[in-house]
Amino acid sequence: MEWETVIGIETHAQLSTRSKIFSAASTAFGAAPNTQACAVDIALPGVLPVPNRGAVERAIRFGLSVGGAIAARSVFARKNYFYPDLPKGYQISQFEAPIVQGGTIQTVLPDGTEKTVRLTRAHLEEDAGKSLHEDFHGMTGIDLNRAGTPLLEIVSEPDMRSAGEAVAYARTLHALVRWIDICDGNMQEGSFRCDANVSVRPAGSDRLGTRCEIKNLNSFRFLERAIDFEVRRQIEILEDGGRIDQETRLYDPDRDETRSLRSKEEAHDYRYFPDPDLLPLEVKDEWVAAERAALPELPAAKRDRFVCELGLTAYDAATLTGSRETADYFDAVTAALVLREPGGDARAGAKTAANWVMGELAGALNRAELEIDRSPVSAQQLAGLIARIRDNTISGKIAKEVFDALWAGEASGDDAADSIIQAKGLRQITDTGALESIIDGIIAANPAQVAEFRGGREKAFNFFVGQAMKATKGKGNPAAISEILKRKLAG
Amino acid sequence: MSLPIDQVKRIAHLARIAVTDAEAEAVQADLNRIFALIEEMNAVDTSGIEPMAHARDLTVRLRADEVREGDQHEAFQAVAPQVEAGLYLVPKVIE
Image 1 (cartoon, one colour):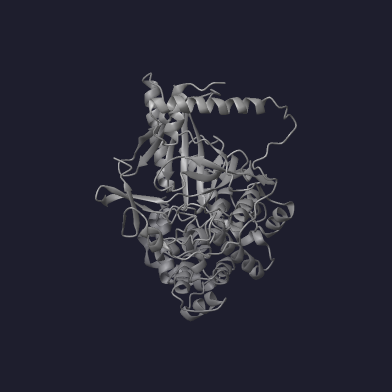
Image 2 (image 1 turned 120 degrees about the vertical axis):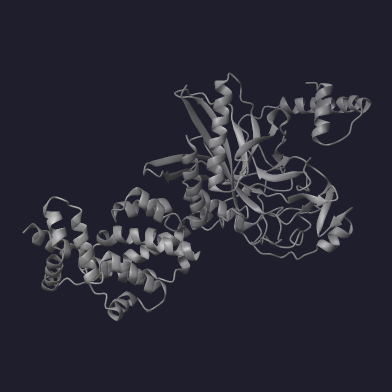
């Protein structure tokens, strides 16, 4: 039987506020245990929560950036359960009236097709503390520094049909929360974690199968592998005539499998109710308007602009808008390039610029473990280099040499590429007369290869190109060399 | 509406309150009296009235995003039953 996979994703994004959502304790990562847990966070009797404006502001910004509705009035509710890292015995969350309702995430799949994932909601809530189960004489150690850290839980509709789509969605969402500066996106530190709801059903069916929830996936690779495993597990059970139990599962990266954590039979009954300690949250239109005005150009808009105005492919545009820093860098390269182009046409050098940013530059940054905003080669310098490729001053191959020199800081200023080309004498030989005499020499010195080529062995042509490049120390214009060779060898 | 005894025990378990069989019956009677009161309220026609999330018709005051709490863990942990290496120790919660 043909099976269809159905996936919905819940994401917990830690909001990048300085203080906690209901207390004025610090949210800084990595402090000594319990040094950032104040009386509110550890639930001493008599304390009262006071919401953080910064957390609400970030939720509004998110809602606007996904085209969701910002609730004029939303309500904080208590979600009741017992666990030692939740000292109040309940988590303050939002239930019936979340701050963001609806919205969409537009993502681009690796094959270039666009995919829209609908969002159900996004709500504000507090994080719990951490339980350390190892080696405290059979006891569990509790660190409440994380308790009360603001989270935005972003819930998607079950709109994804493969692990690949789920990863594309999660990556786009991850890029967005960083782009609008509401979350640092640090997955190792748990600032962005995904739960995947996975089910399968016979292809063509419009009824959802029983789902399992895989908790706390903190890397895109684990998200993909956990879903792939889970889909295979469920199909195997169904094809053997079995039944899927609705349950929560954990992914074990060491064994590459998911394991049952708890079944819904004994599931929690959270008994949500409005928190009497907190009045309803009101967000006035003026506040929403101010946040809207302060939003940067969003990744989807930038992507469309790169495709429509610069003629890039959807996939290139999606890659370049993977982070705001990369997109800003690319924008700066194309802006500088336009000034250097004779006609001032932005489209002209855009594809070359995209290739350099995603290729040579990304590779060098990767090797040096640098982020693009710390790139030793500035956008202006890269534009200066690309301009020299485009006006045939240097070949693409020599350009890599110039790039390495730029990277090494051998020249400074916006025109550093020109200084390097000048200093190293890398200017391309386009003088046809000079190239012709070099090529005449090569042809005369290699009668055997000439005979081979004329005898029909086309590959021998590359030998001559190679010899010509060698004779010109890589500075011969490849197009000119090829043209002269074709003419002379034909004769 | 009357609450069966197994529901009473379930509610007690969710609240982590130990209730003996004898106590459960007393609690059942109490809860049923509360339900009777709720039923009386349910009889009131509230159609067209927006439910309130809070008894007071006000909205919440927000706090500026500033860190104003220092480290007080030593004072807090002085009254905790068991601590080690800055952590609160509790009975083991997983196997």
